[in-house]
Each structure stands twice: as structure tokens, then as C-alpha cells.
Length: 424
Image 1 (cartoon, rainbow, N blue to C red):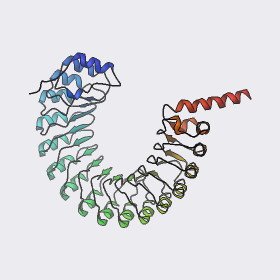
Image 2: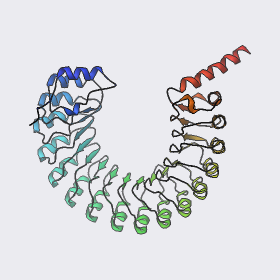
Image 3: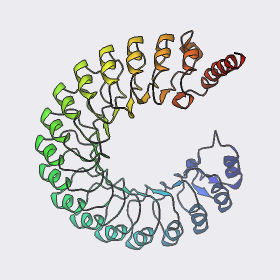
Image 4: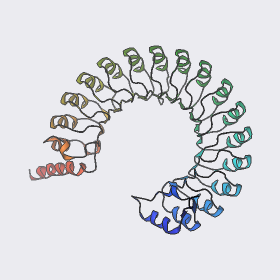
């Protein structure tokens, strides 16, 4: 049997003093109470996932952690330790505990902040107790959910994550549709047409990031839903489904399709009519000119972070995206001068953090961009054209986001310009 490692006062003091290269605390199996008292002064997330036991005093001290506390190595939670931890106001992770007693669940229900549990079974009584928890509640190990437990959890208020569930009965879906908050069901790979119809009544954000397929009938049902929708594992989106989902009407909503690698012209045309605030298509690596032209009509923020190339015609189209919105193209490593000229006409936040080189002509064009411009990936002075710094210095300082080693160089050019103006 390997020797138990103890987190001592001396180790905690060393951890506290070194903020940039801290020791991994998850390798320790026990913690001295004096060490716990020091660690709570660190004001950082405490990852103590190697701890196999915790005294009441240490639990009381660690409950004062102001960021987050991970205790994923604990296999059980005595009532007195649960009582101490329940006073914590920040995130608490208990991913190693596979079962909770009703008494412990009742105690934890009074905790504030977020609670992440690894329980693999959820009794109806424990579900009833945890339904009173006021905060984000995650069940990362729960693969089955009884209809009675679903009915209890429907009374919980706050974000509810059930990402290990692979199946959901229609009765459970009916109960969960009444839940108030955000609902994450990212473990589901299929969604019945009936469940889609039921969950379309849900009042909050829905995440189905594990769905690999979505029938046209299910998409039509979800079109009645009034909120944000994540469908990041879909690899195909039919034109009919795109047409249906484009009808979601909440202006604060979003549609995420980060698993799509292709998008038809017809689907792009439909999605351009979506009235929500964001569309995510980060799985696309290329964009046809026709799709770019359709997406340019969308009046919201557009995330195309997977694109590795962009034609001049596509750049010209995307430059027409609605003023003031976000355009993320940080997967691009290259940008032609013509494309840079087109994108300079975009008005809003433009992210080009993936670029590895910026020519003088491109810098001259982009310096005229109206809105925040992100170029954080350019971290070497050799990555810029001869006059690139000079042109970037002409841009509104509050709009330009550069790597911390490049920022002073551009500022020096800006200072030189100011000196020249004073001399005149």
C-alpha cells in the first residue's frame, strides 16, 4: 500500500506564496487543519481531489473558500462534515461520492452557490431533498432518472445539469419541462419527437450537445421553443430542420451547431432569418461564397471559429454582418490584403486571433475597422509587415486588442505620432 501523503502547514504556506507555479494539491490524501486555515487565504480554486477523508474542523475552514472547492476523492460524506460544508457559498465538487443519504442531501440542500455531484443513483427521497437546493445543480454520474425523481427535480430553481443521462422518458421530459432555469441534457444522443414537443414548452436555455441526429419532426416541435438551444454534436442539418429552427423567436436566444462540418446554401439562407442573438458554426472549416452571402444577412453575432480559409468574396459578404455584433474568425491563420480590406468595413467586434502574419497593407486596412479588433495571436514582431505597427497605431486604442508583448511596440509608434503633433 502506498504511503499516505499529508498536506502540511509548510506545504500550504509554500502554495500560498507561489501564485504562478503552484504545487499540485490533488496528490495529497490527508490535510492538516493548520494547512486548511492557510489555504483559504489563497483566494483561488482549491483542488483537493486526492483527499480521502476530511475532519470537521478542516471542512469548516475550507467552507470559507472564496472561489471553489473540489473534493472529488471523498467516497462518503459524514453528516457532521456535510453540515460544515453546507455553509459554503461557492462551487463545491463532490464527484467521487456515488450515493447520498437522505439526511446528507437535506443538509446540502441548504448550501448556496453551485453543487456538483457524482452520484450514480438518485433515490426519490434524495431528489425531493435536493429539489430545494437554490443554485446550479449538476449530476455528472447519473445515468438513469426515475419519473418520480424527475418530478421532484422539476421544482428545483437554477441551472440543472443531467449530462450523464442517455435516455429520457416522455413522463420525465414532461416533468422537467416545468423546471425553472437552464437545463443541460448533453448525454442524450437521441430525442424522440414526443420529448421534443414536450420540452419545447421549457422556459429557459436548453442544451442537447450530445444529440447526433435530429428528425425534421423534432426540429419542427423545437421551433416553438422560446430560448437558447445548443445542438453541438449534430453532424447533419437538413434544410427542413434548419427552416424550422430558424423560427425560434427569442432575441436573447442562440443556436449552436458546432458539430456541423457542412452547411447547405438553403440551410444558411434559413438560418439567416433567425431572430436570436447568436449562431455558432465553429465546426465549419470552409465557407462557400453563397453560404457567406446568406449568413451576412443574419442580424446577430456569428461564430465561425473553425474556418481555416476565407475567400475574398466571402470576406466581402461577411463584412456586411449587422453593425455592432460579434464576428469570430479566429481559426484563420492567413488573410489576404483584399479580405482584410473587406473586413475593415465590418462594424462591431472582429476576432482574428488566429492570424500568424499581418502585412502592412492588411494592417492599414484593419486600422480603419470600427469596433474591437482582436489580434492576440501575433506575438512576434517578425509576424508584422514593415509598416504594420505604424498603421495599427492610428487605430482607436480602446478598440485594439494585441498580445501583451506587442502592445508596447504599437504604443511607442502612437507616442511618436503625438510628439510629432506637438512639435508642429
